[in-house]
Image 1: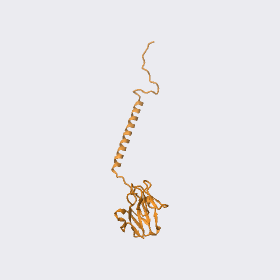
Image 2: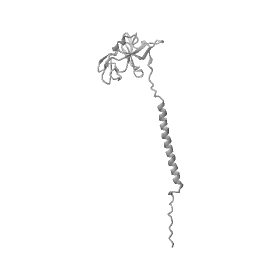
Image 3: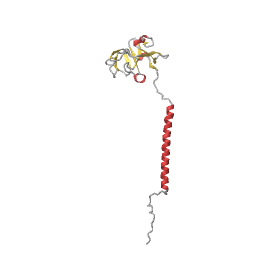
Image 4: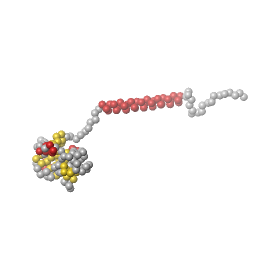
Length: 180
């Protein structure tokens, strides 16, 4: 018998260097690479384009109407405008005024404590009377007042663009309170 050396035959399902399955695999990897490159490039350009547009901060209006003077009872604090406009509306026996909800110590938001009849800052314990004058804690000065007046339709109009400080004597300004 002659012994001929035969080249080993490829088993079914295996690939050789001449097999088209190798080319298909190569093209799949090539397509996957191009898709990855396109996604990375698209993400990069998306970030660049987003950088060109400004970040817009939507803030509540600085001038707002709070209602008619009769809606506020004497010697009371109205907390309806605390969250939306960062202002308290206080009515004493003679006037109505709007106080800032920002503590003058480090900028926390005090709470109105009806039972104690005072504003109390939860951060460091500053206390303010119903008028806004500080009397306890580390707050260095009273709360600020906002400009307040009457609108054409008879409602009270608060303007937060102008604030009045007690230590500068600005609480005596006719725009810092509304005579009732």
